[in-house]
Length: 89
Figure 1 (cartoon, rainbow, N blue to C red):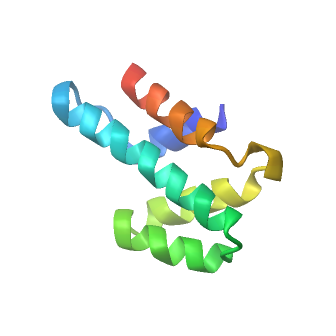
Figure 2: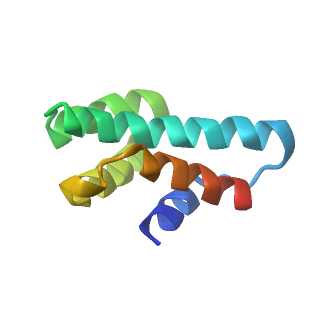
């Protein structure tokens, strides 16, 4: 459910090849945040990194999401779920 909410935040509502590119980018952004947290980066550092990629508001929301996850959920499955939700839109 959280992933669905995050995908909605990004407003990914396109179709065709452009949507697939956006969905792949969504997965990559989720994975970047998760990997950075696993590497021990601070929430502030992750937020800055994501801001360079996606803008401030979306980066803040994604960083908040990533840091709200329990450690055992920090897996590529989160990025895959975000992509699946994006592709389903």
